[in-house]
Length: 112
Image (cartoon, rainbow, N blue to C red):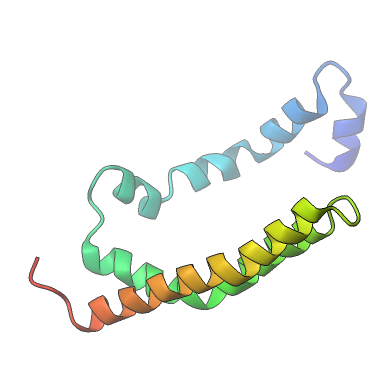
């Protein structure tokens, strides 16, 4: 489906057209082996810890992006400033500490 096809089809909503256009990608996302293994209890501890360690460098960027979005909420909103500060300073630190702990467990696996 290309952009002009979306404009020409007035019998369905734009959201319906987006869902149709992305259905295969969305299904692949929902059925990703990492997610299905986690959901079905087939995820090994080592694999989970490896993901946490590999994911760690990206966490501050994700949270800062969210914080920026909050900061751009209604201008001067005390809530948006407080939420952005909390997200940036607290959640980034907490998740980074969790990732460090995962890295420690990965290099020194406990006796499960």
